[in-house]
Length: 99
Image 1: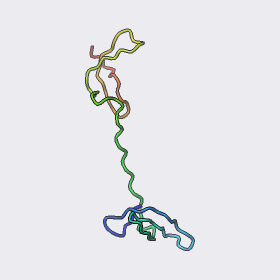
Image 2: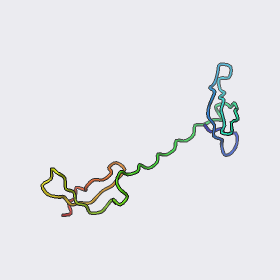
Image 3: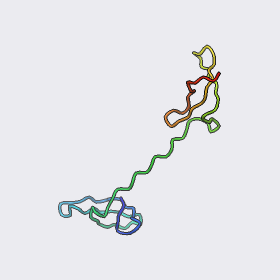
Image 4: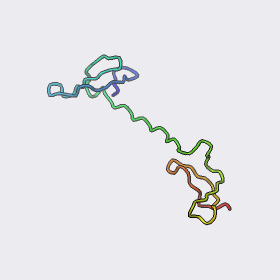
């Protein structure tokens, strides 16, 4: 949680939820070990962290856009094309044949 009592807001962890006696008060623990109570209007959720880029399973020397030859067991002859690398597919031979 972010506690908006100072600028910039302080990071804290909620350790106590509202009760019948204090229906809008949360107990929070700060990184320095201090504990305080704050009303809901002073608290906000920490923005989600953007996911880190997916690392490719391909070796670093494999680059997109280069000419490649693909020859699999079920193929009668090799196919030539361009290697396309994207976040969805790690690497595929482009359908456009280059010969």
